[in-house]
Length: 167
Length: 318
Image (cartoon, rainbow over all chains, first blue to last red; front, side):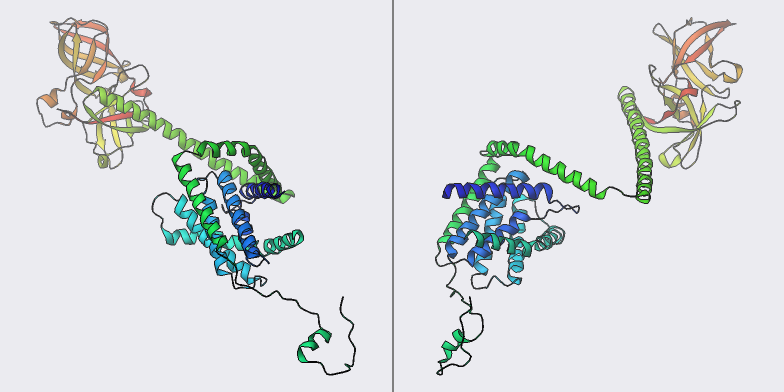
């Protein structure tokens, strides 16, 4: 049964990654980062869970599956997105240990921090040659983070509702 | 369900109890424990990070790349279908609606069409230029000349003067007296005229068929050569005439005529000193004998009236 649930999570995250890379492209060239935002929200909810160890463990597995799915659909080295997401989740979990995640500002801040780490790690992995950080920050990272903030609250509350319904 | 509350308590209750009796919703808050309770998730995180790093390493080494590509090939049809759905949806959303929108769309498409036509024209020009450059390269490989290509911009409007204007001038190093050659399909690169005057960005070229054109020429017959004078004959109803050839060498139809480069050889301070020897001019068609000399009608290898692109011989390797 547990294995079936795990396979279901993997399939679900692959489907979401597929949706992200195909349907959520914006005319500006950016993509609505559905999977990273969901994984960060899952980490927040996991940290605030009755059993945070279990919740955070699940969020980390989401990060791995979602990252690998993005690598498969994005034709990037397998593990690059996964590592970026795992590090983002880890930092977010460490920073939000003592916070009440029900406040709307917490998911927004968590996605802000998580996406900054995610984009930075991806840049280190995927950009060939030396990176001109100032322009990269202005042209890539900041717009990506701003775009990620847009769906954060709806996704966070929807995910919380779904998880509570399950639990 | 809220507990039933008495309006008047029978005895004073201690302060904590009043919370249960007041008409306020009871909030149950879980006491927060340090989260996470153990290092287990962080150990898991480090383990997963190492796993991801290992996957990146293996993929970069190509060890698991076939597996990733296999999964990608499996998911590609779904992704492609979804992408086309998004494109269709985007096209539907952005499609013009109403007469005004359609007219604006048509106007925009017409503008785009015009721009594309311009681009096609530019591309065709580039292709032509590319062909000419290839031709120039072939000529330069076959001859010791340094060439400068130029388009024929203007042909002399009056029939009495066989001249063309080319789109290169003194700024590009052209000087009067320089030889101008061209090549048509199936012909060798051959002399078609001499630069007569130059402006900064244009030059007038006197065609060799003009009656005032005179160039020293060498006719080659069975391994022997004789020097004569090649003169234009267009205004006399012909093309070129080779004169002043002694009867010591019997000319025959088909003999080749090239430039002699006498002015250059004698180092005379004339403009024509810039004409190098051995530039093909034409071939003998008919021969007449007048006294001690022979006069030949010469058919130029390249008809100067047909050329659209020429090369100026700037210099010749010693």
